[in-house]
Length: 189
Image (cartoon, rainbow, N blue to C red):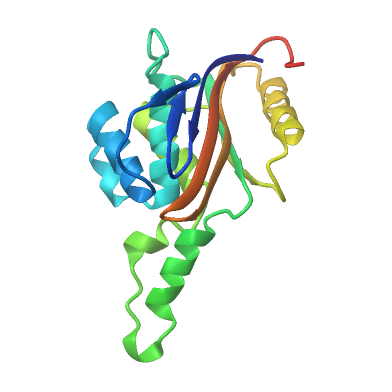
């Protein structure tokens, strides 16, 4: 695989291909600031949970450096990994249903109680029709992630590239993303 671009997001900073993006916010407000300052308008952003916002912002920052920008294709995969799945949002949803006398289940919150929703959001926003997958791992294991992406390329000869990497969200203010845009090719060392 050949790495085309990389993005890292923590609650306190965002780097794109090793360059720090200036910001004045942290946590959930950092994602909003980066969205407003650096990304095109996408109305669904404000309806998303934090995991989806994190994935959307990271993937869009990756794709800004792609020339020409690829959309509406079936040869790009979205393959993400984390440890907690959608646990942060699951906890929020549980709060809406735990008190039988004050039960107010929210369909808007329930939608995001699956971690693979973020891969779908990225694919829908870009009209990608290739493989989408979200895997849970005990820890951020680079070798397992690389092997999984390489196996995905090997299993589907039509795939030429993938957005892949680690996307963890423990709460609205505690998250990390390490995403790459990779092209199929020689295996990484």
